[in-house]
Length: 168
Image 1 (cartoon, one colour):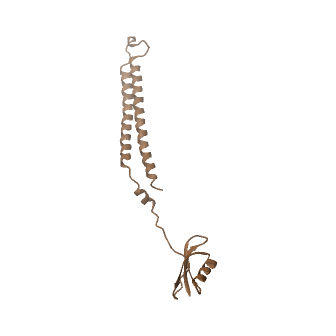
Image 2 (image 1 turned 180 degrees about the vertical axis):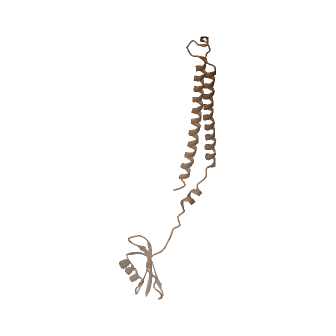
């Protein structure tokens, strides 16, 4: 009699089956274990007919593509919007710092001393004081721009970290 012996290959662990000829189920299990190195899970009698080719069963697992994984992660529109707004304000502060510096230089040049009476007790002339103040204001404004630029980058980094946690 022919028996369908199903189980796993003892070396690879893959699901497999074999059709064996034996007088009873116990002998079919022994043949499958000894000759085919199988770990038997079930034995079923089958009627005589065409013999199936033994081998591992063709089981496939459909894995999600990388594109499908990324599309399931949230988009975090709030972080993207906050990053864009912060980047725009940072650019405006950088531009403002440049404008302050240019106007300070223009003011320093335009208010140059025409005589010695424009000197001060510290020896500074009013034009150089205006230039130093504009440089300080420009540095302060550029620092605010840099902080906003950093906050914009932090928003995008947090978004990327959160999205990558979904790709595992």
